[in-house]
Length: 171
Image (cartoon, rainbow, N blue to C red):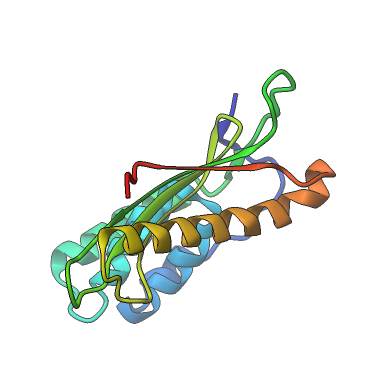
């Protein structure tokens, strides 16, 4: 089955002492590791948000995350191909319009067959003038990420994977 499994080859991971050396350096290693370890994405984001004014609670969260990372440093995400299911990239996308003058938020999840391979929540780069424009910008951002993943997967699967984009927009 797909999911996190132990990885038997040697895996170089940041030393906990280096991670704990200084709070300003904390988000960098965790954000790089979070690119490969989806189970650490939320933790890396939350640690980065507290970068400017860390509290004792933030330090204890950092230490807990570092202990978790040390305990699970040999884990990796494995994907198993289901030959009976069609091979395609499926994107579920939504956007939240912030109203006039504000930047909207886009969120999406990208699946390869039945396995979630990428998630994102982004502030849109442009100010949308309507709900429909915010949804369109969100769909464009999600589709661009899906096309990049298709490009990365092409050498592995040997063909261009079809992309399906789903949204709840009625505009």
